[in-house]
Image (cartoon, rainbow over the protein chains, first blue to last red):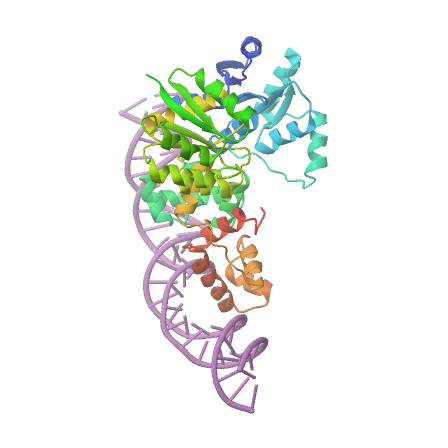
Length: 214
Length: 214
DNA sequence: ATACTAAAAGGTGTTTTTCCTGTTTTTTTT
DNA sequence: AAAAAAAACAGGAAAAACACCTTTTAGTAT
């Protein structure tokens, strides 16, 4: 089974080139390409059963740029890995993308084998960082942060967002058409996963990781 | 038949650029442009048979600014749709325009297709809202964080920050060298002040207003 | 069909929160 | 110093949150 990839870039030529490249990789195949973030939203919403494992996002796009696109994907599909693509190496851009939730950054002129290596690393380790990027991160947010990526179930995410509202668990259960006991289960499992004591910890985590936006 | 648009902006260059842009759209044409609100009043009165469907209003103008202009149009020509244009994204401005009766808000550096999409949406659905604006509206309507500012006591602030940690109230009391019952008092008074139901609402408020930074 | 597995739901009991009702203590004002 | 105001504190009831452990259900693989 191959991991699915989506390419987002307004330059048709380039996105097609990448598509061709990725499709030659053993473990990866391109699901579709988008010209901008809006198109990503449309496609994601249109086929919720077919969400890619990895999204390659160009930083500079009209309509909805890479940063916004990244933020939206992170907020709505936290399990998707995002790799930023750009021609420019402007430090600010890289940082913004990473802050937005991208887990790696790749220059567009990267060689084929570099891209494949990056994709593999993302799947295996959950991140891909060139040394350059690592240094940038250390310099900027010297606040260490061992933010390991957690895999959430669809319902856990839905629950987490509702838990950030002032609803009681009983009310959340009603909204999700589930038993309060199931909600208890989601809560308990999230508490364990995220290593928090109570709902406050959950809410802070959700906001910090852009799963819920106040 | 095309929908008629009027552009109101004191920057001739920009209003002409917008005019050119709009005139390339299939379903829209620019009737005329105005430099300020006063001119709008004159033109509207001079040709009452020729009132536009949509008015694009710049927020910052001399003589009669965007908010006043919007109010006048809404009061005298309720069928006209108003879309606000601005360079600044200051939250207060957006809200004021929307309260004045604008049904949408667009940044001036918006791309051509965004403008067209906005215009179409206005004609079809009667409104155009970016997500950002929607959130602002929801907040203001629910009286969450609209315009009333809250005065916090020093201890209330200290407590609020601790309430964003995972401590129980008892533990917070110990940290502040106060009785748990006093903490109860802080909490209850904050709940009332901020109109929230529970600690979750408090935490979200604190983060949103940068009283606590995760 | 059977066994396995993950999600959903249930049972039971403890702790914490929330929301009332107050009273006492401290600080400020007159 | 007395009066007024603000802050701290209290008791107790009810609701909600939390923890832990078991059972049912539904889907999948064998």
